[in-house]
Image (cartoon, rainbow, N blue to C red; front, side, top):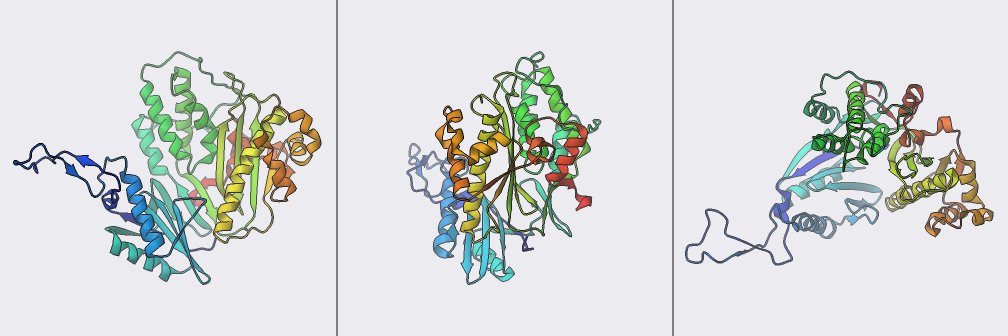
Length: 412
């Protein structure tokens, strides 16, 4: 939203930089056996790939350099994020193992951080952010566009569906999958491989989150019907392979969260599915589609639980933004399409009706009372999170998909 340049660096052989604080021993490496002491072992000073200590040792080495040597602060809300303020200038460093994104208000400061890293570690400066962890990043006139077209193409090719016929929606309406539906397939590993790969696609394709969540519930014993539903999802991705998630330059620092639930929709255990979509300004920044852990006794309770889950996510985002000195225009607005759930959040008179609900769910009332969030009603047809809780008809699905900022790159 500030139109800052995004830079990417990659640390070569990152785990070799980790210094071990525990005693770890290994046998003689092949070709380096000491003939006079063949039964001795080697004590490691630095980490090797394959050690369970290696990732943490590398991160501690990097954290020490960032915080102690270069004066960064490690975010308390997100441990992989580092930031540094110098006057009114700020720089952010986001770390994923050995892949690092750097951005800030000063290009000179960004370059200085990259130079410091190059002096401390073997580093590849990959320039402007374009491809990160399988996600393609394209700069557009209105912002940036994240997609996974190559990754999706690889999944389709792996499962012999590169030439399949597309379908307009990821899941058929009115068709409910259950654990016992259909005969168990012999090659269950193919199903697990496909669903596992599809989980990563939800990083840039939030509209398939519900379908992937549903298919993931049958990994233990998938049936032919489950595999057909999985192939339908692949066919949908085939037709929308160039779609992705847009982040726009414009918009205010205002949080809007859409929360929804589909009550008792699981035919196996009658648990509800909850979903939320959190926007910062015009940009979708967080979303979830998840089956609730307990059975709700009413649609109001299911919606109230979903609202509490969404509130917890918004609270975390608030704490992260506050830590980064990013001030919100007004209190976040929670949009819910259930009037009774909204009443529960505002009015303690309804306490008698919710004695069976865990106390921690009621923390949403404290947030409302403290005016830290606002809960408002939205009609069901405009509930963006609806696409995260159930299979929808063609028109409604395509309408809500656009509301999630999922478009082809040409529309950016």
